Amino acid sequence: MLENSDDLMSIVVLEAGAAWPSWLTEYQRLAPNAVVIAQARSEAAESFQTRVLHRVAEAINGSGGRVRVGVIVSADSPDQDRLQLRQNVARGLLKLMPAGQEAELVLAGDSEELEASRHGLFELAGALCEELGGTRVNVRVRFSSGKSGTMRSVAPPVPDAEPLVFKA
Image (tube, rainbow, N blue to C red; front, top):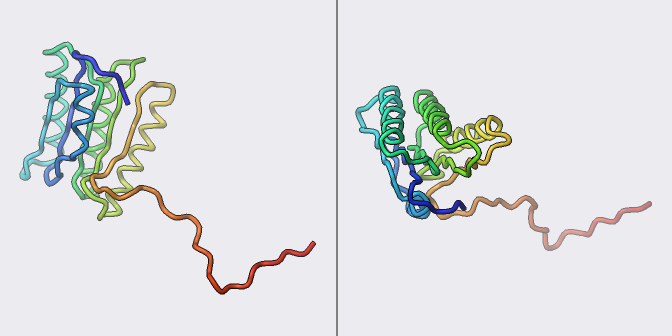
């Protein structure tokens, strides 16, 4: 996790229909000057994107702060407009993070129910990581559920099965 400083900003972008993640406070402690931008239910993805990028640039210019943490909390929607919104906002936030300094971009989902939404977040994270090679910016994907992200990779042994014997 990153070091704390008073001039650091956290930017939280909340899509319409997304829930506020309980773990977000741990990031806000690291960058106490927070800007939260929430999408109205009736607001189109394109106009929300424009508003987010304008508001973030305005906050940076007005305060002279540095963006240390960017969080995009997505709703469970894999539609193309939302995917494009996430990509453009993520890239916009990354451009505002100081070169050569530690920063984090967190792509968050508010549940693990819609597999297409999860895959979209992981795909975006992968593309961003490739673009950020050699920088000190971390890209993370988080979900609000408490379920572990690990999966069993080996099936448990069958109790009454005969052991395998290999002959040379």
